[in-house]
Every structure is written in C-alpha cells, then in structure tokens.
Image (tube, rainbow, N blue to C red; front, side, top):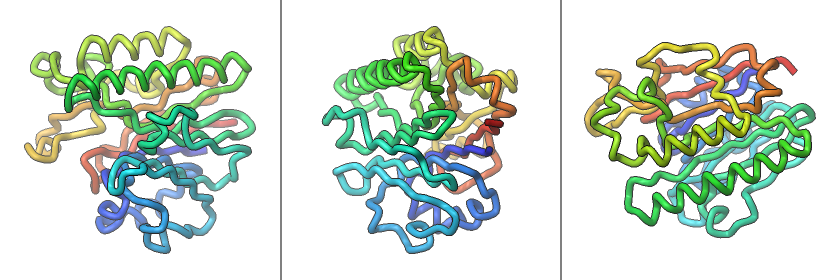
Length: 254
C-alpha cells in the first residue's frame, strides 16, 4: 500500500500545473493533501469525481484558506473532520480516516510565524493532537500521522539551522514538542530509512530557494512504534513540482 502526503498550496493552482496527470500516473492507495484552499464545490469535476477513489474534504470556514483532502481507494470504516474543538476545527486542518489496521491522520498543522498568538495556537494544537492520538493508541489502535507539521525537527532537517533558530518552525519549544511526540512512542518514518542531509520538503518561493535546495523538512509520516514493522519504505519526492512543498510517502504491508 502506497500512502502519499502533499501540501499543495492550493489544489486548483497545483491542478493547473499537472497535478491530476501526476496523481493518475502515481496511483497511490491513499493521498492526503493539505492547504487545498478550496471548498468541495469549487473543485473541477475531475477532482471531485476521481475514478476508483473516495474523496473526503475538510475545508476551513474562511474561503481560500487552509483545508485538507484525502483521496482513498479503500472506503474508510469511519471519518472524522476534527478534534471536536471548535477553535481548531473551524480552520479545516484535520481529517481522520479509520481502516481495519490503522487510523490515518491527515493534518495541516498551524504556522506560528505571524505572531505570539498564532505560535501559542500552534503549540496548543500540537498538545491537543497528541492527547487525541495517545487516547486512540491506548485503546490498541495503530496510528499513522502525515502532513505539514510546520516544524523542522533537527539541524539536519533544514539548510540553515543557525540563521533560523529564533524563527517559528525551528524554535527550541517547537522542536522539543517533536521530541515529546517521539518519546510518546511515535517514529519519524523517513529517518528510519534515510539519514542523509539535504532532503527537504519545503522551499521558500520568494527567494527561489528550491533552485539552490535551501529548504526545510517539515512534512512527515509518523507511526506508532508497534506499527513500524509494517512500514517497508519512506521517501521524499523532491523532483515533483507544482507547490512550494513536494510530496512525501510511505509504503506499508498490512
């Protein structure tokens, strides 16, 4: 089973750059999209009614903002559109699909760069998510979490760590939360298969950073450690263009 994740920075914009052709060629079993910036009715028909896929969308109340979508070949046993906490759910950041062997979280985690209020919101969102996932794990559920976490974990995960250590996305408090997340029994799948530097998933478009590979790895697949034995590969598709992020993925055998 191939599961992909991609912050598309606008699903209609990325579609004009060849997303649908790439998607139909790639044929993932599941693909989780973040920052779709659209309501379902705003999507062209080929994205609303894609053959062989069930589509679930959680859009933000605010038009043209945030939003997540999950395309899945297998119909989930259950679908949830949030944490049942209004201040988080209104931003359309959460899609939870349950399958027989695992529960998949498709999440667009908040960005904390704007101001202290948004950084606090981000950290509160992190803690709320962790409690939610831990509760399911305690019930014996396997957890797969993918999406844009908006934080690079270690120095290897961004091109210029020293210059960004006081910038949200690489603050000690944000990185410490990922440490806590891992301490709770979750594994960064990519680093289980690839220890190399210069493997990034986001680049600043304004500075044309992608051409120089001055990037950040802020998109992840995490799984609970009990589920890791089913993960056969984890990868970053840096060559795929169309957004300021690139797709990432895992292959699992369940």
